[in-house]
Amino acid sequence: MWGVKLIARLALLLSLAVSVFAAGPLQLSVFAEAGDVKQYLSTAEGRQDAATRLKKLHITGIYLESRLADTYVPPEEMKPIRDFFLALGFRVSAGTVNTPGQHWGVRQKGPLLWLNYQAEKTQRDIRQTVHESASVFDEIIIDDDYCTEDTSPESEAARAGRGWGQYRRDLLVSLLQPMIFHPARQARPGVKLILKYPQWYDRFHLFGYDPARMSIPFDRIWVGTEVRNPQTKRMGYVQPTEGYINFRWVRDVAGPKTVGAWFDHIDCTAQNFIDQAWQSVLAGADELTLFHLSDIMKGHPGHALLMRDWDALVRLHQAVAPLTPAGVPYYKPVNSDGDGNMWLMDYLAMIGIPVMPVSAYPAAAKSIILGVQASADPNLMSKIEAHLNTGATIVVTPALLRKLGSRAARLSGVALAAACMKGQAGQVNNVELTRPLEVDLSVQAPAANVKLWATAAQKKIPYMAARRAGKGTIITWNVRTFDEADYTANNERLLAPAQLGLPVLPQPVADAIREPILTPLGLHLSAPAGVGFYLFGTRHYFYNFQDHPVTLTLNTKPVTVHSNTLSSEAGTSAPPASEK
View 1: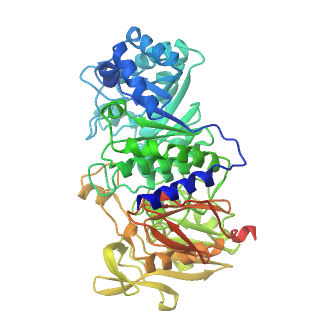
View 2 (view 1 turned 180 degrees about the horizontal axis):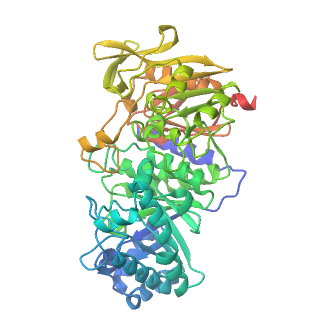
View 3 (view 1 turned 90 degrees about the vertical axis):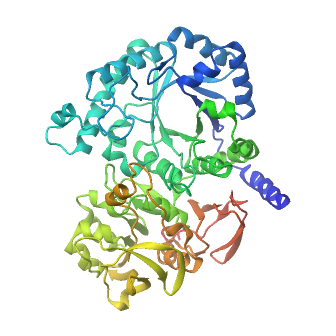
């Protein structure tokens, strides 16, 4: 078996070696927390040991943190560490994570270990940390936790009637210049500043992240692609495709300055760890940053796979860097709410739909998917109607139809209750499901329009219904993921709170769902769930997340993808209908 997988990986190396674009080499770096700096880098012997381990893993960059809560490394101790790594040819920058301590910052009134940014002490302490970092380093990365859920009396007074999400976004955007940029550039006028977004893109807007406004002043943007183990609750039942989706969506918002992907070892098997690397490179990252140095020093099973796959990752980066991603757009405006459809893009990607996250309405696309997030666009209905008149296929969810009201219901030919009636389907078109699918029991449609029936609550309900509208087709897909009630019930704040049935769909059901969505692109895919499909123009890749090989068929051509790996060659798909 290992011989077969080795041959497949050698084929992948060869296929990725040829590229018409001379991309800069893929970079690998590590973030060292303040505690890591003290524990591993405070002596000459420790620094040498760390450098040896980093070089073995192809790591050539390091971000050194001087402050984490009350753990502090003063500038006079940081400078010799900086100089040591610079002398060895490492790229050396500063890093900071805004985490409250007993004496640093003010902890929020809320369940997570975040800061109260309305507090003057928090602002003062961050200004000092940033100023000191810029006095030592040419570049600083602002890690996670530039966010808040504070509900203290001072924040309540400051929000002045605004919704909590709007207040938090306004506050954190307003603090960028006085709290970060001014003190940094006062210490070093040419200092470069990087902002790193976490991976929970469908909840950014609730806790202060605003990629459209926040990204503008920063020199570069990093994106969290840390998805960890989808089978455990510890870090949420996050799908391995979430990092890819998050990176692509943030880059669509922030533009080409989005260059770095950040993932970690937490709750990761060896395969979980390397999956993060492959998804990050497929998403377009030019640099991978590992969190954090302590895990490098202690060792992790994923490191062996990283060393094994590094050359292939470098070649994949060279191959995809010049290419424009393609596929089926999923429209998520900035600061849009996903209540009812949270993380739906991740699950679509897990069933072989080549999802292309976009933040502006994709009016030229032949086939698109609109979840409830799209309802943040006040002109959405007019855009849908105009788009249908071009002959497009538009897939909508019950959560979106409910937001849009009677005009959308008439257009789709679907009726549904004012509130979602949550249910679970055990069958689709009489095919028994491995795990139940979350559905809205209130959905009704004329039998002639129903393409797929689900069996739930001892009755048949429409699972997919299609109706001609204008020159196009509107498809109602009775799919549901998570809403705020699911978060409350599962005591979760940020990540997927439960396991869903979509990633383990039986192949006949997955094929039937994909068919009307991909046909307008000139694509016909027969494949099991658990295989990601990535389009770049007319080139494609498949990534098999399963522990066994799969054979799939794309436009009648069979493709075998070995377990837990990328397809061994980039194929050429039939051109989308718009290119024929």
